[in-house]
Image (cartoon, rainbow, N blue to C red; front, side, top):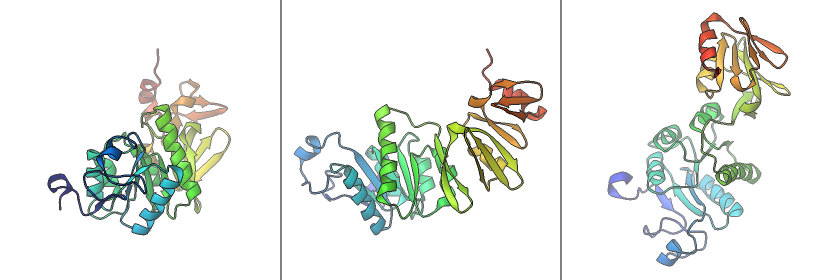
Length: 269
């Protein structure tokens, strides 16, 4: 069944109300026009997209624990999820990546880039690329309530500040056997070292098994390639001379290949 042409998909389930006239209600609420137009107007709307009912149940439990009056809907395939987001705006989408019909990445490509999304998946390998889609957070299953609550607070902070989803502020990278959060605003520059890259931060360094070319493509526009072995954060550049850029106490070499493009991006007066 095509949800866009023939009505609700069998893979879309409002929770807990099944009437079809009212898309969702808080837990324990009854169906009816008064609730739809009155008491619950303006409540937080959440769409859970996961084909595993146990995971979906857990996420709904987490949602209602942090926001008892939340309006929770579910979708179990990507096509139904994309249609639900287009038809009914959601304050937050909890999106699995491994979905039937249309995977999570395809859903991200199909919906408004300003739609707040938290990725919840068993696959950590998509973490860095996911933040190109401006996701709020990236959670790896199983999701504890404490970790979910942190993601919820991040989503609330963005909404309360009225911050439009734009360039990612934080990403996740693999360091050894761990997946750790990286604040991009603190990254001063990135250096390629054999098969690894080294992130030089304000107060420490982090290394990850990444390809420099792929990394350059995935980073926000405030990062610029200046050398085959270096990418710099333009916000941290203090001075450019004929051969180097100065970032703090470090001099980063600039090759002729990248120099002219770098000058264009420095907002010279």
